[in-house]
Length: 144
Image (tube, rainbow, N blue to C red; front, side, top):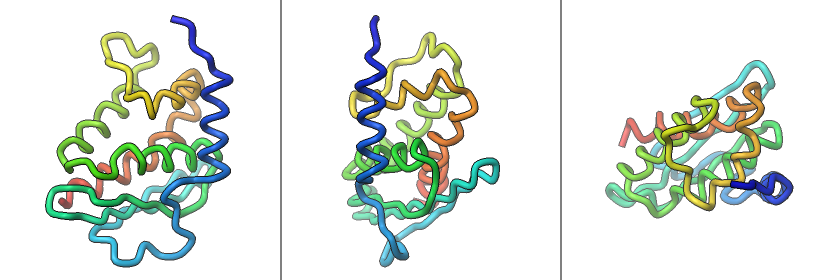
């Protein structure tokens, strides 16, 4: 399978430059807020869940980080907003496995809206940048 990494990089840059569901102030009225930090590169992210029962009505984030971290956070909020908590939890687990496995053999590819993150899998040092917001989301989902 031929992968067009330039298309993926364009998608990541778009999400970095114009992140979706990013708040510049506190995550007001969020039902659950969890934080993640990567001291190696200075990324700091907060993820806020706005719940409607077991459904993630809305997911927002705030913080600062590298382009990969911000793009991944933006893409994550879009991917899980509107999902049931259990479905979002499974997606978090899948993303963890997908990025922890170097070659991804035996793993299903992530949903199409997250495929752009594949461009980062070739750089082990950047995997933490991708997963930081996903880890904060998983932590928040443990409280649901």
